[in-house]
Image (cartoon, rainbow, N blue to C red; front, side):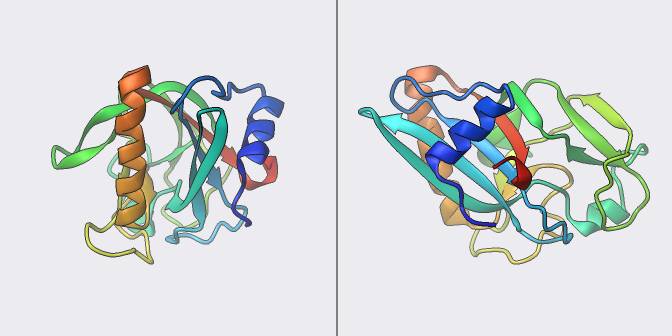
Length: 195
């Protein structure tokens, strides 16, 4: 999958009927792109952040996972199965807070829709039951010190960046955006085919 650009992301969201924030400085669009390559336990997805500053569009795209690692698929925390975020737009999903009480991240504050994968394999199936609620679907980093190659236990449903430097950059943008727009952030998850 090629890294998407600002215009591609804007077009994809508008085509799906989603809101794309295009006014003001640092009005962030946080967009997950789930890869058509559905190999489990890899950071084969993207998390993009698109915004304007002084009218000029900016876009950064980070290696991420939008689905859980195989450890949690085989060992679900929830009896109904492991959470896999359903593509869609989630207004005000996240706010600045602490991930598991440990470090600054984006933490879930509004309900989200998740597939409940309970067959304990490494494949995401589209025919799984859907659950709606507060499940701790946060946005955080994997390792604190190096770029992670495998998802493993880093995600049980969270949206996770592979590189701690990328995550620090994302958080700096969120902190700056919060000065203008508040500490709540919408998140949109699309699929590679939507681009």
